[in-house]
Image 1 (cartoon, helix red, strand yellow):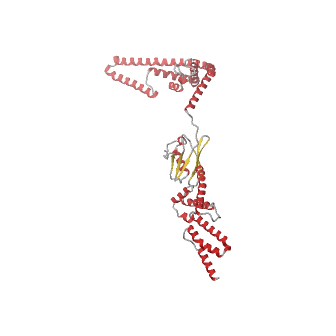
Image 2 (cartoon, one colour):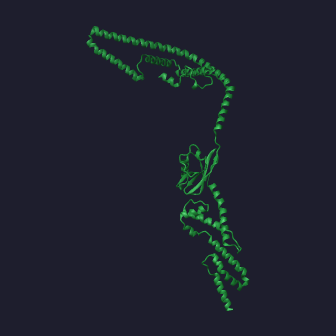
Image 3 (cartoon, helix red, strand yellow):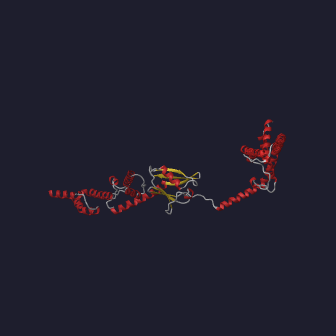
Length: 440
């Protein structure tokens, strides 16, 4: 009895001793011990079989588990990013954020491992199932994340780009202007929204970097990618309907036909109606100008008489000066005495002409002096009789414009042409600038 107990104790010690070799060698080594124990205690055959199967399964699971939290914290930043990219997760952020993200993914994958209860499942089959399950579950995750990280949509005809910023892992929408904005503006907006962006660039589908001066309109014509720090986000903008040359030609033909139809149905009638309207307005202005014309004629005659009087008076004063100088030269004194006097008289006249230029900013010409004196007399007399010269000039300008437009409409050579293209008409109405220049 003591010998049997000793054999049982040794068998259980051999069974419970931790193995330093692989699971396959452990299974081969434990087979005789297990058989011996089963022969000693047949009632525990099923229990021993289940414990051996569960031990083998736990060993296989521990073999393929990810590193624990303590091991993950010892990894470098580059190794953490490599593992996250292999799992299809975002690799942007600080080291603590990456460790938490990797720990969560490891815990989730451990809870979803398939548990087997049969003892006839080999480790190779179990490992193959684990790899296949991880591949099938991670592939859709990458696709969804890529679609959610960045996308472009049109809102009221304007493109809006939604990007997941790396610092807080939040989506941010940017409203883009296709013509006025360029790639540099887009990158500047990204950096302004997230200060954690150290490097940002736009790459086309051939791997060539797009310049900052490229417009958003040309950028959205084809697929591209945006590199933010160590992430690469692929963008597939929606297609836009482009205006072709054929459609533009069709639009031009339609416009031409519409213009011809409008001319055939409306232009002739419109010109006749416009001509009658201008004639009525011109008739009204003439009735309004008639009493003003009479007053203006009286004032003009009065100013002309004053101007003629001043002209003849100047000639008379010059004759008196000539007579005085002749008397003093030949009768009272000699030429030797009067020569310096005549010189100073001539120089004084020149100084008077220069003073006229300083006051009026015009050269002393006889015709200009006469016109200026006429205008001064006219405005002075109009002010006395309370004649509104500004209102009279405004009515005259409107009357000249109406007459000019009436001649242009009734002229068959200039019919249906805008006013700035008419070149055969003469006596165009004066503008406000010309009137002000004439007054000065």
